[in-house]
Each structure stands twice: as structure tokens, then as C-alpha cells.
Length: 165
Image (cartoon, rainbow, N blue to C red; front, side):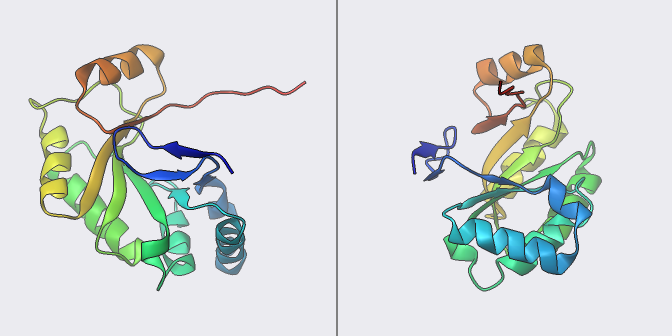
């Protein structure tokens, strides 16, 4: 399987990743089975978010005891320091880990920078070792372009639609 390096993180994984949004719709046992089957099939990067209801808990259960074998990203929509810290601690607990490989600001309305407390929260979490790499997700191309130009984030996650004929 072809491998890719995730942004500026240095993390190299098979190009196929598991987006955990849909596992919020299935039972914990089914989600754990899906996640482990994905792992057995070669996937090593798993992406979830606080906004995906119970998907973090399901990812945490699936990879408990094998955290060093997978890369996990999660996201927060926090707008304040207090909410950021609450989300980060909840995510760490849910994922049954003491670090997140990539922690991202979720669906950013703009490029947050050094003047924004929420960006500084990411930087501090990385210094504390709770987060290994910082990222951001955007759904508007202009915002994504500003993020890339800023050079502040190690990853940018941007949705795209692929239509197969």
C-alpha cells in the first residue's frame, strides 16, 4: 500500500485512513470490530473528534493496549481556554491515552494565530506532551489558503468530494 507523510508531522502511514465519524451510528462492539479489522487490513491512522458523539470512546476501546501501533487524531471545536482544556482532557480519557498524535481545531472559521488564545492552547498542549502535533480543519477554501500561508499548523484537513462515474 502506498504511504503518505501527514503534513509537516513526519508521521508516515498507509494512504488509507479511518475517519471515525460513522462509528457513532453503530454499537460499541461493531465499532471495535470495524476498527480492528481496519487495523488488520493495514490502516494505521484513525481520525475522530469530540463532535462525533461516542466515537472517541470506541476508538479508545479498540486500541487499548496497542496505542503505540496506531496514530490517532482528534479535534475540538473549543473557542475558550476552559473548553479547550476540558475537551482535551475528555479526549485523552476517552482514547485511553496520555497523548494525541495530532490535535486539531475543528472546522475553523478562520486561521487562528499567535494572537489567539485558542492557538496558544494548542502550542501549550504540545509543550506539555499531551499533543504531539497541531493541526486544523477548514471547510472553506479561503480559510484553508490562509492556514497554509500562515505556516503555523503541521496539518490541514480539508474535505473534498470525489465522484466516481
